[in-house]
Length: 100
Image (tube, rainbow, N blue to C red; front, top):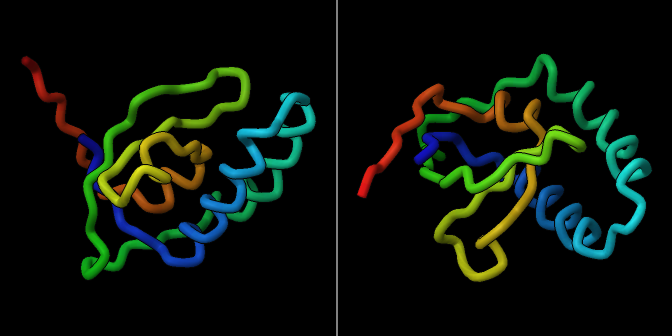
C-alpha cells in the first residue's frame, strides 16, 4: 500500500491520459509525450494533509518509466498509469507490504 496525496488537477490529467493510453500503439511516441510532464513534476510538491489517500502499486513499465496504480475510487481507477515523477510529487514516502 502506498500513501500519497491527491491533487485534483493531476487526477483530471491522469484520467484523460489513461483513456488515451489504452488506445496507444506507438509506445515511443507515448513515452516522448510524457517528457513535459516529467519536467514539470521534477520540482513539484503536492503535500496537502487534507487529501491523504492509499493506493496500491500494481506494476511498473520499465520502457515508459510509469507505475501502475490502483485504488478504490471505482472501476475506472482499477488500473491507471502515472509517471515516476508524478508519484514522487504526491508521495507521503510511506509504503507497506501486506503479506498473506
